[in-house]
Length: 367
Image (cartoon, rainbow, N blue to C red; front, side, top):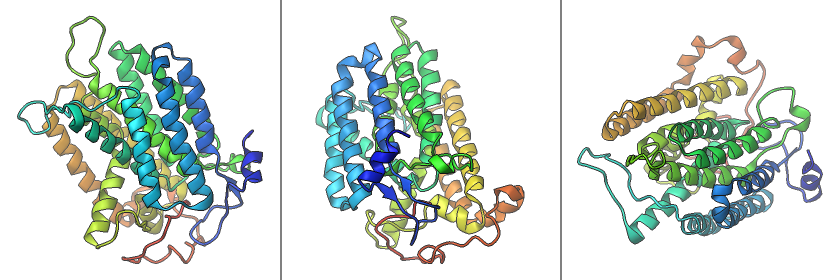
């Protein structure tokens, strides 16, 4: 609420029209608000104070770039180097690197060292940044996916004796929940609604990448001689399965059509559900259920010590199944109550109404 006048003053407002289907002028200050919550909250966690400077720098960079992009539309070729700089800050500044991706081939754990480990970590962080950015196309979606993942990671960290990581997850989850009060697709918050914008989605991406790497590369317990990670690297992919599926299918789809991966289209998962007849609340609930199921599956497989190569194959299978399901969403609609369907008389704006195969837009529709 405090930042809404600031957004109006600097014209950081999302207006309906064209490809945007929301009602009224909505401030885009959710990203800045979450960033302030992350920074102040993490600063109170004693174990992370030596890392606070690097984290703040990384968060501030992606939020600043995102806010400028929300206001003026920055070229993706300029955003990528700045995202890489943020990835370097959070990687080198906090000493967080991907040293192992686990036994994903069934031949033993695959290890990385030196420059290769650094490059892999930077690539992972940049992938997470863009995955959450692609996911942010519907009220509450990106924030809720991050919240579910944070809850799962926090529970796992606490159970493994990593109170420091559990505290960080609590801080991030609290800031995310505070934003969702103003962003969930409900009628009660329409007068105070705000969007996270690119600033918020990229902030979620870099923060989730950092916490996932930390949890998957650290050992559980203290002085217990445990040598396995708190959560396996493959299990962390289950926790953020929805943005992972969204990102890789988007890249594959555009590559198969000869399009640049940086040029947006209108075939993200939420677009497909809305075209099939789902309402915004119905689509949101479907994504929420899928996110919880994916997270629960990942934690269960990890707890049962299921081989990581099998868990990864299962994840890929569900990814393919989900893509197929999104393109056949119309057949699923009959299994949902009428309240989950799009209200009668509602139409897509002309920019996204038809299913046009090779349509390129600078930015996908937010709502």
